[in-house]
Image 1: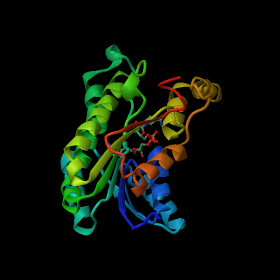
Image 2 (image 1 turned 90 degrees about the horizontal axis):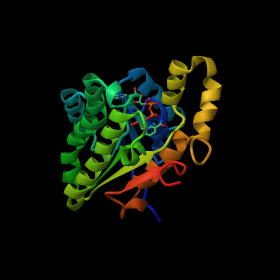
Image 3 (image 1 turned 60 degrees about the horizontal axis):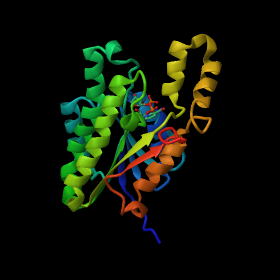
Image 4 (image 1 turned 180 degrees about the vertical axis):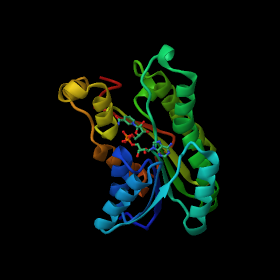
Length: 255
Ligand code: NAD
């Protein structure tokens, strides 16, 4: 039998899409969920949904790219809780090849996608070491392994998330901390809807269909499908898994 001790799980970008599904799913495990998002209203909505289904959660506003803000937030949180599970999910995209990527675009993606993960791991690692256990899951993308056309900065920064995972997994293996990476293919979240709204306002449905059909499996993934993998990887059942990358992409990388 799997003992289901109440744990504290912190999810960044928990106000929307994949992060929100992860929060709702882990709440079903009786974990206490700390929802961190740039958008406090969105984080609070996730908390309200968790509370409506009988779970426990708290919302925090923070920008993962801001080192001082994140270290101060985690210090405050640590006075009350020890974080058992950290899900580095917050991330942003940019469309363009290298010529269409300004230095400021690259800096922005690096700051959120790469430094954001560094900041959050820095905020929890001492406490995880002290309790000799912890789970860290980083959200990369298929772009991390194969690169995506016209997603130069996104592919590059997600590649860094993947290799950072391997490095952290090695450095803290002896401390009982597991660190893994998930690499989703196209998942239907508000990010996709906003993209279609912005770029294809007149033929959204058609473009949605085209995007879906361009996946080897013929559709996009759902946030809940990603959350199910996070649920497994963060559980005791996955105790033998560290330093691994999990594509979950309807065959995108290999088929
Ligand atoms: P989303 O845009 O729906 O949600 C992202 C959330 O992160 C938002 O609530 C946003 O407010 C928050 N956020 C953004 N910047 C932040 C910051 N600096 N600090 C704190 N919070 C911040 O995105 P999503 O589609 O659910 O994607 C979640 C993660 O999964 C991202 O890392 C993304 O790169 C990755 N991913 C998504 C897809 C996809 O197709 N949707 C595919 C592969 C990987």
